[in-house]
Amino acid sequence: MDALTDLLDGPRARGAFLLRAMLNPPWSVLIRDEAPLTLVAMIRDGAWVLPDGGEPRSVRAGDVLLIKGPEPYTMADDPATPPQVVIHPGQVCTAPDGTSTADAMDLGVRAWGNDPDGSAVMLIGTYQMRGAVTRRLLAALPQLAIVRGDTWESPLVGLLGEEIGKDEPGQDVVLDRLLDLLLIAALRAWFARAEAERPGWYRAHGDPVVGPALRLLHDDLAHPWTVADLAARVGVSRAALAQRFGKLLEEPPMSYLTGLRLAQAADLLRESDATLETVARRVGYGTAFALSTAFKREHGVSPQEYRAGRALAETP
Image (cartoon, rainbow, N blue to C red; front, top):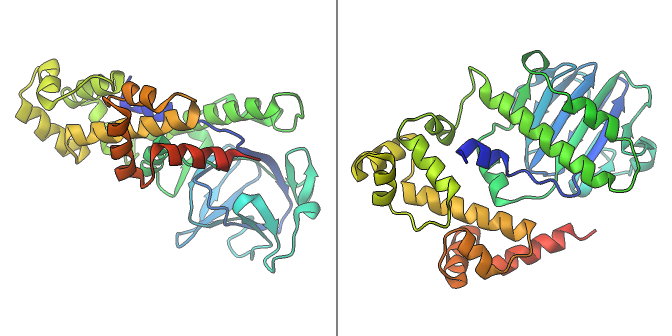
């Protein structure tokens, strides 16, 4: 498994917030939901995105936006239109004065806006849960990434649009998986751009020395890796590997491995009921105690506290 595959394997929507927004000008929505990541597919008409402290960006039909939180941002028909609606944490919807607008903007099953026949239509999917692997993904993205509609093509936007208004058994799971797939497709298109500012791990994947070393680490986290062992596997000296690895990824091989192991441990704690001992073995720690010590140093909470916090956050 290469580093990009491992990173893209991270998104796991669970009870993501999804809706179709339909709006007629003038409209402006200030988003303060503090969500870690939101995907917006512009279906019809255009809009402006105003990142907090950033320059307004124009988006067109066919574009897909990836918006990284927790900083606020505004979407509007025009940069000069003042916000009429504010979205708070938990997707609470109010007017700027705090008055609830939930009923007025409710247009049906996962449909929202000021007019069911509005000229501007967009699909919105919000990842509300944070996870360690997701943090690696967020670190690789700017606050606002726009994948232009004329640079890629995917049937997933249409599929999500067809499913988002259905109210059938298991529909939330269907939508979660479609959102994951659309996000992965958009991320691949974003990183594939010629002008993309690719993170170090992405550039390192194509390096003849560091690339194979990364694949070895990602393929077998449980192996008791050392720099000497890794260097021998890729056919270079220990010093050569350490120097090249540090230059491309700005951290030593074993530091990268530790971060990867702890990220995967967090993912397993979030996504499975595996015991702490099992998680420890799967990510290369000899004992649950060793994993707990490293995990708390990295995350500030024990694995048990981390898992309990996830369960609490996911409780309706």
